Length: 384
Image (cartoon, rainbow, N blue to C red; front, side, top):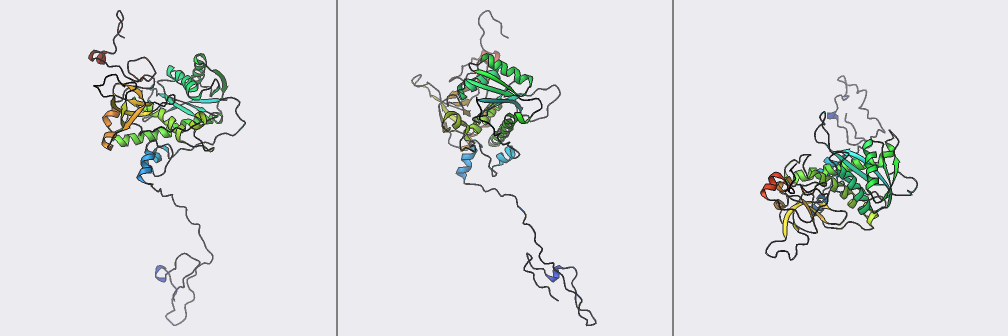
């Protein structure tokens, strides 16, 4: 006896696929039953994993410039941001004054050892505009953190009166007091209740977004140069600062605007390279200085300053700023592991040996003695 296909079931059932099939009895009596197929059974269709659709190579190259937006076809976005779970912005009454939320975060590649301290990341967010900043410090009481917040509020946000909000961590309270003493704007306090993580949601969410963006940019750079970058390398603080700038300039909010648009009234439209890419750059104010020498040099692209729109370039002698940059012609020229590993200078000391946080347009030329022992000391003074 054959089994008739059931149209209500996906696929026909074949007799040879069944372990037990009723057949006529040997004595000629008819078999007592047929295979029973239950009627009306249905199943839910499984929801398969989304298959990433890779766009054109042109779109891939554009995305690789900053990895600002998560793309499921990008290896570095998946590895760096795949587990990011952003919190929804709190909805409430309109803020009566600009509120700056602050918090510390960390980026570590190896477990923390007993007695070992890690460099913190000072993260701030303007609740009204969504604009953020991220800066690595030597320690939580590093004086550069105070200078950076003052510079950020005055020159980037342009506020004259702000409310600074943070939890009751002593380091944040001390930082706020120092900002108040140094700043040219009024600082109003707002402390989050102890143990109330929700009240610090803006800052904590921003820390997570920064960490995800930093991981992505670092993974992309390491793959480009074919080498790992240690966490204490001078280029790491620049990656962290650039990560915040990428979010400000390219992430579009529910209102259809970027944080940069909300603060400055226009979007960021300057041409950029990939972070860590080797580029040609033109020295600032070099025209007519020495017509027998080239005004161009090569360096590592580290981002664009919010304050002036100038490009930040890393070199073996320190970090400087410029306005004109040219891309190199081949992939091999753009991604030079020696250039990346050789970058010297941090945001708190762009030119090693020079006590200033300002990024200059040129670097000091050191003689052989100074390269070994440090800068010359004034007569009568001992070298530290």
